[in-house]
Image 1 (tube, helix red, strand yellow):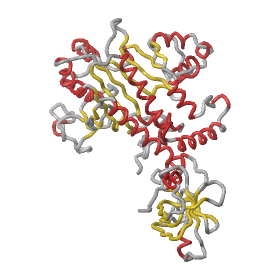
Image 2 (cartoon, rainbow, N blue to C red; image 1 turned 90 degrees about the vertical axis):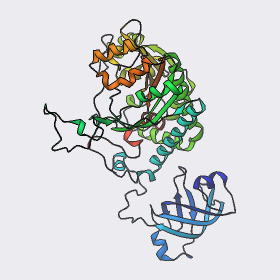
Image 3 (tube, one colour; image 1 turned 30 degrees about the horizontal axis):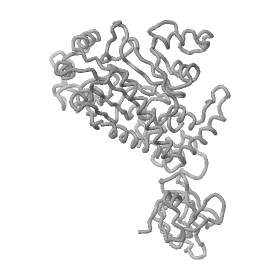
Length: 477
């Protein structure tokens, strides 16, 4: 079998052998030189055709976007820019792409334009590079957990619980939207619905993962989650992927150790395995930075940021210490923060998180022991009665990338928190059972996968690191 991918041809270089390659035409110039790409690498392979030997009707079918199969001999390149090329002997056009209507022509396209062509944008260098890095990160995530004794658990997509207490969820129902059945008090009767109760798309697999950690020891979920936030920002999606490990017998310190080790592992993996894609994305980012005002430009290149995380120990700082640092910081005193820090208990914004990482500590930061009032009900209450065993990991350029905690394992304390928040205990009866039967210290964290891909690729908008973004007023494709 002499069929090769472009990546194999460029790396293995089986010179003077008959080879066949299939892919899409990036450019065709002088009726002679085809730049071919099959998605296996950022680089194209040059295929040289003898137009005098080819039928003119076949030549007319070769244009940017066309799917072709080329057989010939791999030889050392005569021209500059590539080490090898294919002397084409046979050419088959599998599918044409009309130059008048094919939108991804070889010129610079804006990211906004390409979002409108999400089904074709992966044929550009930028998006093919981003998606290969995304794929490599996915693999590294599974590899890390599998190597470290975790079991992969598939949490339900449809759920009756709101793990975050946020209330911004997509409802799942089969009831008639115009005339739903009503009960005696005139409210919608969900007993008539498919599941016999109100259900939603999941916002997190955490609660279910806790249940499985309390039997399997260490588990992780890696699946889609949904938030019905009407948030049209460069950092929010309505559908995104979450990595959520849960570990029995882990306290907050164990949790922080694991999260740091995990992040370094997956970023190290792409530094070793995605070099050409990362170099291309770094150059793209440098060109983009040049268009910004000087004060908005990043001090670090993309590869510098990745190495910054991999090579530095994460500094651990309590929320209370962080508030003191921020209160006394120059931007706070000079009222440069959009959200001034005035007192303990403030919910930190991205600008505060980035100040701590980029200006104060100059390394990744793990903040811990947050005020209970700004964190979820399931986090373990500290002895001071006002803080919880929560932790967030902060990165340069992005702010919070991981949120986690030691979970509240004491039944009486958890019950008190649920009552205080007005959550129906009946809805969480099974979650309470975990505290009745063999309870133990346990911890976990959540990492929004797209945030990680955003950081790893240097892209500026989260809609550009997921194949088909789901955002308010947009469910195209």
